[in-house]
Image (tube, rainbow, N blue to C red; front, side, top):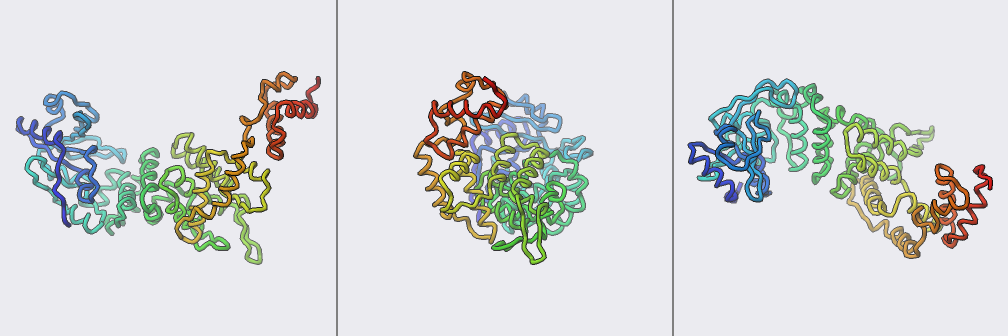
Length: 454
């Protein structure tokens, strides 16, 4: 592997020099070294390790935040950077499956590196003299595109239940494979994985979904048993055959659809869940006909429940479930202008492009091809033409509002909402009806059926 020399930022060297003046040593460790070897330098995110105690770091530097001082970690603030500094340590008593119950501060960098998760994260560099420490051949594993645990993988995974998910995430992000003994230990340590908070698992899932090929990570989650614990609803799609042009069962179709979706978390979540309800509604006739009637409604409901369980923000849940609910449109040139207007009104103008991108990913996932947005160009042009006509496509576009209806004796509340919805339907059918006086006349005419008497 040809390595460009690592050139630490001046602030990092200054920190090391300050510690050296006090008889201490500091190393660059962790992800920044790994990313350098991968050609992905990010000088804004650098971790360091030292034989100095947290209390000494607090004395030696003016601006220090005691971010995790109990476990030996503080953050040194320098202009434009925050450097996380951790005292060399050994970790003990992982009682909750995530955090050590106690730590022992050490004086040896190699002993500190031996507690880390994977060999590619267990390297260190002296920023002053350039000495590189790689006791577990992390550099070699990077060259081999291999995720390998430091020491006994089962022991590492029993210490911290998030590590199996991190192994899969790194494999997905980097396009690496997980070394066999490391991979084999994941199913053996699932009880510890179960102890990890859903928020942490959700964050790792998001990183997998935003990788270059999320299907690789998702298939590893399935293979290792992690998917059955995190997203068990997806597994009903394994072996659930489809019809027509579909080359894959439902689960592989979802994997391929996620790959085809743009790198946007909302879109990739929608791609992952858009057909999750198909196994529940599948009906197969005696002639071999397969039907998934209204699966988009079941899928939207399931997506919402799953995302609530994983504690996604409410706005993300709403956006994803909305896209899933509306992904099954089948436009043709025979659609009337009123049908197109109703479609836009139901979906929302702001959701049209995300929905079209989801549909392209869905289509690509049918056969595992690349997405082709041009297939929706005729529909796009049709919508653009109607939007250019300043058509009313929502309640806010009506030339009438609740104040106007109140003036003609319609009480505020559910009945007013229903009357406004009827008026919108009228305008969607005939935009020429979007006139205040016309709509008031229509409202007066229909209020009687709601029991409103003048």
